[in-house]
Image (spheres, rainbow, N blue to C red):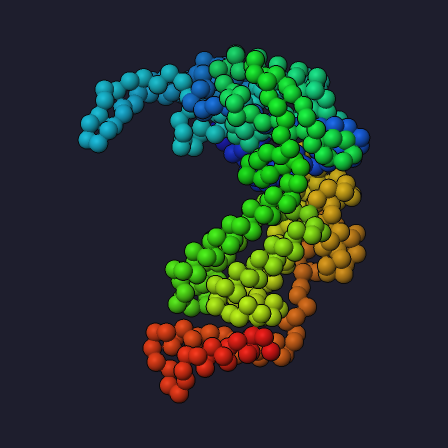
Length: 435
């Protein structure tokens, strides 16, 4: 299989089942392309295709024919063809088993080789779309179609171009038995210069699809007010999970509580795509402070600068910035040319969310933007990440006292603490937190 690695390598438009590729990178490329076209004065059409049970519909004759076209070793092709065409399965219900029957299509879900074989199968569609001459480009690089496994997204600057791409997808569907569920396909439109939604209709497989202001692409909201929708979702999830943890782990020690909080309440999936200079980030930061105070049973007016020190961690904003910088460093040094060219546009100031975040980070740490970009390229961004409150001796002393009092309050609920009433310990703790 190692010898056939180059022959089986998928298209650069495919982000699924590939090393150093992720769903966030795929959404990032999509948003960077949309931003480029909108600011250049062009409308943008984004079609999210839903392939129904694509893994189960892989046709063996087509699949192994594609392997031979890629000059894969004939012995390997024969081995795979035999293992797939001679497999049989049984169905089980309780203790009863059916008679064995042959499997005539579909890759083995869970098998190590199945993702690679599926990528080879879907690459036909991506290749036809790239050779069609329509769709979005960055320079001479085609980025009119993006795929993550069986999730395919089409990007076009006009309705006629999108219709031509959909015709290509329909032809592929008929030839390779990959059915697209039109009822679940979504169309997102963005108006030139403003990125506002505009009404549009398009026909696919005999069904009319109306445009939506936004949609969910690989777990990230895209389209109109996408940033606000993402933040609101994470904020609500944080509040709900904090309420659950507070009811179940009220008597747990500080270290365990904060560990649970980071795992279950701080799901920052997609934070690399946030515009850190946006005002809605502040609302998330406020929610983080309130949730942490509630979970740790601290006074509602506890100084915010104490919170991360009590938990012996970096401030929330620094944690988000660190994730963003790592992501930027990964994409600017990526081996995929599509990811790399999008990162280059962000670094050079494309006015996208990532580009605005770089400017925010530069201002946040009082470091010139050019130096931030150079450190991102060289993966040395840790050099300017610091907090400005760790040198305050008074804060450190108060934090130590708060931790000791928190332990005493927990101990009091489990065992008697000599010379103190529980109410007295709470008064002392509240006083230190807000003093």
